[in-house]
Length: 524
Ligand SMILES: [Zn+2]
Image 1 (tube, rainbow, N blue to C red):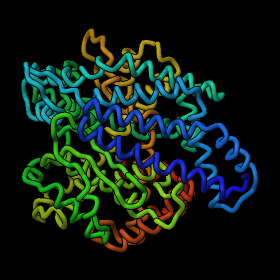
Image 2 (cartoon, protein in one colour; image 1 turned 135 degrees about the horizontal axis):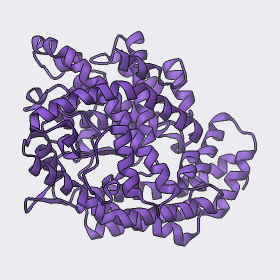
Image 3 (cartoon, rainbow, N blue to C red; image 1 turned 135 degrees about the vertical axis):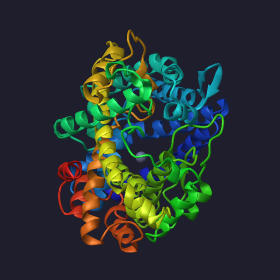
């Protein structure tokens, strides 16, 4: 009964098929959001959650964890313990959470904004906000993008209450605290890092933003103080608008996004054919409008969902998702199943960002995308500025999301609508629409579907910057360098989560995760 090896063997035997079924069902419901698929997804997730809730298994794992064991077994027990812990919750609460998550997620997949009497998908809304010079049309598109928030806000608050109830039953302050603990993250350190990033970015962001606002005001023929959220390009202003950045739209207008992604990874000796074969890459009704990667079986069945159109944004997203996919696929398959997955969300986001950033990399643009050398040379200063602006804009956006999310769990019944805009005004320096009273925060799918995840993107940026410096020193860069692919496979992908994230980062980059390299990139 009690020896760690047999506990782990039995746990794997139970959990592995349930995990596979839940992954498959999640894929099905994201590629075709039908009622039947939602039902199947809920059934599969409930079965997995029930197995993770088993009190006997939890007791055994807790006891075995206290006793010494060799390091890999200890690591497996620790991960299993964390996975079980957040499920030691009364069945009724667990089941309501799973059902509500699936229901909200499926409404996101089905929802299309109505603009000018027409249904527009997210790509079409983005096109209006990129191209239209008509503020009224832009405003309508932006407002349309927020209607999904109003449709799901009550349920997102309810999810926060239910998650809190679960966390408090386990002795945690709220779900925010529990989620960080089971992700091996320290809340104090997280907010120290956020403060550090706030300090690092506040000045440069304000200067960049003032120039960009002046350019936008000229474009729209209004005063800077009249700019509102719809004058920017991304509905959350989480990306840099073309005004105030570099316009690479021509370089990407006829891009074969799939072919360039394949070529990028081929150049590193990291093949993508089996992933591409199983992926679902182009837009369709009733399909999730987002992008993600999923490792179905930890045996090589890795898939990507995208909604590609020829644009820099989708090129970046495709490289990002194939960064995740390559990580999953290159995980050492001789490792035990429990540790055969990315070390941590932040390490896989870091890899994804390292690849996503390539669309503004002069070497990638010439060697992989085949843009004329002279054109790239002429663009080079703008590309450097655009990369820097991208880091600034994204860091400010994560400050909004993570600070908001802590409040969502601290006070799910509070005035979240106003708090959201307080944060947007403070960190992103975007003015709220006059008299706006709407749950605009709820239009961000992560709050419902990927709770307490957003901080991983900021840590991911830090890890990407740190890896970038390591690759520059050890392999002379990333693009078209098989030795860089080999380094990533050996030092980052291979070990899976047999190493804790902080150990993995230190081993791969020679130092602990810090904001130093990001600071250097911002200063450059
Ligand atoms: Zn990602």
